[in-house]
Length: 382
Image (tube, rainbow, N blue to C red):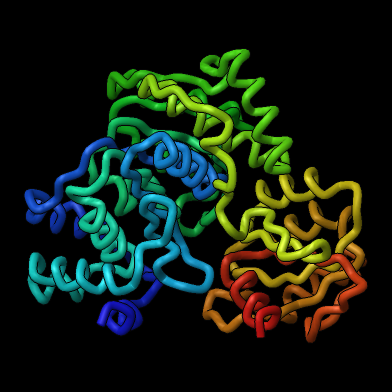
């Protein structure tokens, strides 16, 4: 069974064999038939940009797949086709098909993410006009980079996953941007170095570069105002929407505002009710976006953090909108020691306690990672 097969694979590795995915895909790629692939790389906003674009393409009559990660509660959240998550029954069939293409050693050696990427792309084969393919934490060596694509979309790039990608923005940006193959549309960036490195790579690879702000028209701005008002989109989701719209322009596809209605990806500034907001953001750039979007109110922050995250800076950024912090238990080997988090909170002068239950009179912001939101939803939904 697929779930049992994946559960046997570790989610994280101390060392990664970057040659494995290209080698295995090159051997079996004749069994994949994929049309237009749009690759999304960056630090923040990949999931929502992809879902905006995938939803619009589907509503415009195109068979569209969207591969995103990680999932919050159910594995099949990662593989979306024509407006819904692909059923586990269909994925079981694709799993058996994929196993028949791989040797036993290959199937065993592929990482969780590598195998899931092949699974999604095999499912999308022969049934998709467009595939929106979201990179994982990397770029150049990411499992998604082995597939020939028509267009790369670059969301904002910032520091994150430093232990894998590098400790400075130049190294991180170069690692991500080296995944570009053909043409690229880049969203507005916080760091000037991202543009400089992109220009260097574009010259070496003879790549066409487009900037979002140079593509958007007056009609786009008017359409976005309609969508933003209807969907109540905060600023950072508006930026993701604009990147999705420019991708439609690249393929000369006309759209209407209605194509983007109800297209938000769950867990991205999602209101469970009037008092509870959940967001899977887990880095400083995400924290800045949240703090700006929610600046007119104070919240109880339900929080925890992976130990490789800059939680000191994240908490400092969120502090102006936080009444107090409630630390939620998350059972994951990557989670930071509670004592370290508590020490950071003490230094910042932030009140904190252990999360036990929801007070219906309070406003909550659940933030810290997919794992934090997952742990909270299990309590919230009983």
